[in-house]
Length: 252
Image (cartoon, rainbow, N blue to C red):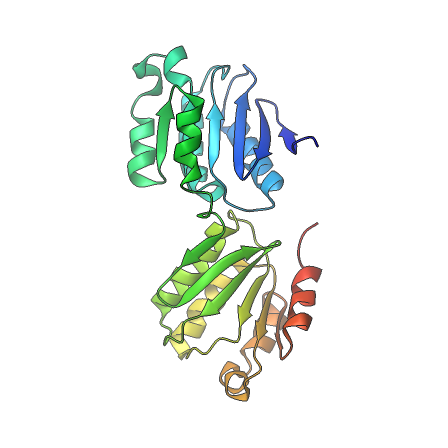
């Protein structure tokens, strides 16, 4: 069976056993080609952040502006990256301090001469693109949506920010459905305000599975408000109905 792949103006992108390979085609790299590459990676992975191996043995010229674009976008498309071959083609001055900057400030980022070593490094991060933990919730990427299970914590604007930021990273920066499973959490007014302020930038739809009348009561009118003004947002007693709702809003 052929491996799924995408082709852009500067790279070929393949997906094999959870690791994305971005293979240079010898073409120049600019801010535009970086944006094109990142969009193609997310399209190939369905929005999941998976480890990436950049095969730069035939990479081509790198415009300075492409580095800034790369640093801005790399965390949205992967939890870690390895570069194969770049030191064999370019001197250290060509690469400059970018690997160190990315590794220290953004994501784990290493340069390798041997593919086996690069794959071993990336293997540590195979689950990092599908699960996340915040102080108030456990999150998992599942079939095009993010499942969020509350830990029973009282929410604050900070915990809302942490949870929705984690959901966005799991989705690779794309707006995909969120599924909140029977959340036994407490929301105060500032937390709801923070949630409403972030939800439209994080999700294209949200479903809550709540078979507890107390949870429904605490949700109050907020689902109707959000569904009417921001994104489709509904509460379900049966998880099967919630999953159908989520599926209806998942991009094919």
